[in-house]
Image 1 (cartoon, rainbow, N blue to C red):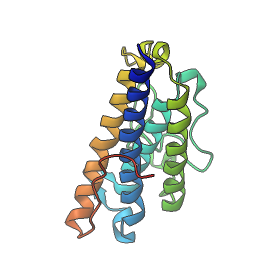
Image 2: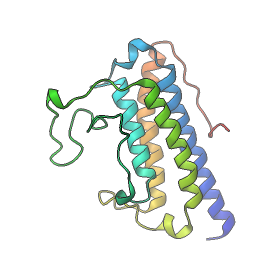
Image 3: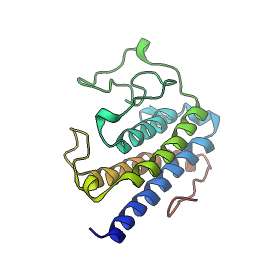
Image 4: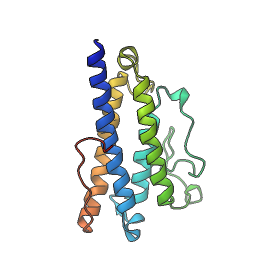
Length: 179
């Protein structure tokens, strides 16, 4: 692969994932207090926001073994939509469910993921992008994992944005990450 092709791929992924994460951040900071604990389907708004951030962070990591884990301010399984995040994925008992996550902490976490995105994409090479994604449950290459990650972020961010629109809060569409 030529250097110019490689730069195009890396900059395109960075622009689109960056825009997706910035739109998620906007949903978090613009969410009215009354909606932060409100429902988005079967989950609370904050649960969906944290779920998106957690998996964006995880899947930006080159390999599962390199993931440092959830932030210390988060209770275990908070990203699992009320289920354990490892087999058998059973429903959490009420005493295992922690408190509502702090909006400012979740927003700051997303900002940190945006910074991580730039570091990760800078380090990618043609070889790493063509190699395994690093997560045994996804039999895809690393470039496909980045695209999958973008789709996941936008799938759930669209849910949050729809809830906000119904409440009269507009989330701007970003064509690419803002500088």
